[in-house]
Length: 359
Image 1 (spheres, rainbow, N blue to C red):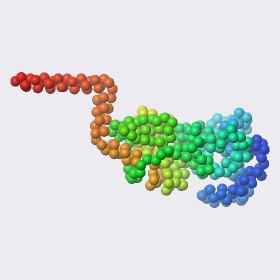
Image 2 (tube, helix red, strand yellow):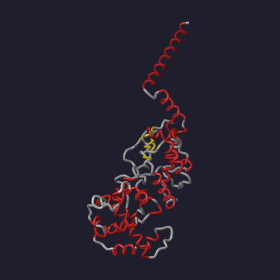
Image 3 (spheres, helix red, strand yellow):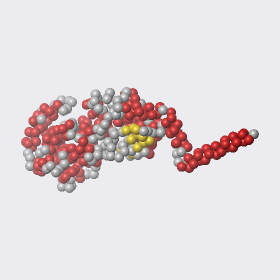
Image 4 (cartoon, one colour):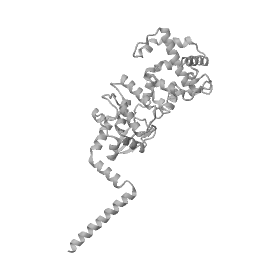
């Protein structure tokens, strides 16, 4: 991979008519800020540190540019294993999504500004390029227009960018944390008459409950989503313990809904969840594992919603109504049979009453 980084650096220099010194100077000017971004002390000399940042930053920038603009030229070279070899770009995306591999986003912005692409206002900003690369890998989590709601100056690194792609548009009413952690399962909600609705074009975290209807945007469960969730969880637990931990909260909420395989089936039937794993049990196990030692802040996301769901499930009339509908009126023929039986019963009672009166 180091050879590939050097190749991308050479391409960047040729394409944008800049020198290595130009790039190194920018990095040296921001060395203190860069070092402060890392939790651990980086035991490298100024020269080695600048070289490391240079190669990693330009590599990421060139991956983004090649994906959007230059894939036809650079990507078809046999020496470019990133785009020439099938699925190699996926390996790069996995590496970029690991919390321990993060590079400060601000240095990417500064070096990107030296590119010819950045100098043309008609071209995409760095956030849009990042979104374009991410949406192909993290299906359902990153949408095509996610970058529009993200201020690049507030992005710490790539994992933070992914987190901001699903930042909820609104917060629900506050409630006790215990109410949040005891959210009903999908089966319990179904048995209490709750209808599941799948809203279109919504953030995954825009979950609402009103008039017995629970709106949950569809979540696609595929084999690598655990990598995404675990790194987002780790980042929140390191940097947002006393703030918004909406990814951890979302994972906890979904884990409550899919406590068993039958719960996964309920959500799948209502298209709130699309299972691409081997079984419904695999989905349930995935979320059970994700919430081990999960951290929920005192300002947790969705607590009021969960309190409303618990109150709904505790009201017996909703369960009786749902049971009546699901058992006796689940299809037109059953409903007709019940109506006919009731009608015949009324006729029999009426006949009996008339007979008694005649006596």
